[in-house]
Length: 275
Image 1 (cartoon, rainbow, N blue to C red):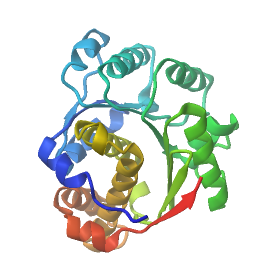
Image 2 (image 1 turned 120 degrees about the vertical axis):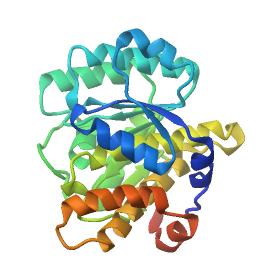
Image 3 (image 1 turned 45 degrees about the vertical axis):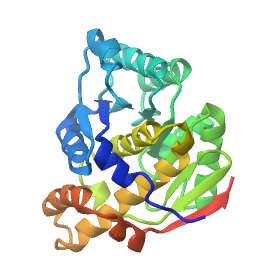
C-alpha cells in the first residue's frame, strides 16, 4: 500500500472550520498554521458557546497543555456536542502523566468523549497505553517495535486512530500501522510544533468526513496529515541555516501553504506494517 495525497486538495477546496481548545502559549501559531494549510481556525473556550459552535464547525482539537478548571468543562461540552454533530474530535494529552489533575482530567475526557484520533509523543501515549509515566521525552526508548505496539494498544483500547510523534512517527488503527520517516530536527525546537500537528491532523480528518462515508478513511487521512507535516518540516529546514529556529518558524508556515501534490509524492516516506 502506498500513500496517496487523497485529501490535501479537498482540504484546500473545502476549507474546514477547526475548533481548537489548545495550549494558550501557541494559539496564534496554531491559528496561523491552519490558515496556511487551507483550513479555518476558531479558538473559542467559553462553555456557553460550545453547543452553538457545533452547528457550523467541521472538526474539534482538544489540547490539554493549559488545561484548568475553566477549560476542562468547555472541553467536555465541546466534545460531546461534536460527537452529537458527527464530526471528528482529536485529543492531544500534553504531559498527561505529570500531575494528578492532568491524569484525572484526561481519564474523564476519554470516558465521556469518543475520539476519532489521539496524538501525543511517546511518553504521553505510553502512559495512555500502560498507565506508567516515564517523564520528559521519548522514554519508551528508541525501540520502534515498542512504539508500534503502543500505538496499536491505544487504538484498540479507545477505538480510535493513534498517532505517536517523534523522530519516527507511528499511526495505527489497530489493524494496520504506518511508520513515517518524514520530518526535521528543527520541528521540536519551535514551541507548538506538536500542538499545530494535532490541529493539522484534525483538519485532514475533518476533510475526510466532509468527503462522505464512501471516501472517509480516517487512518489514511491521519497518515497523509503526519507525512505532509513532516515533509513541510524538511522543506522549511532546507531553506534556512543550521539552528536558525526563528527563520525556520516562518519558513515552516510558508511550506504549509506552498507544498503541492508533486512535492508530497516526491518526498513521502511511509512503510506499512501489520497491526
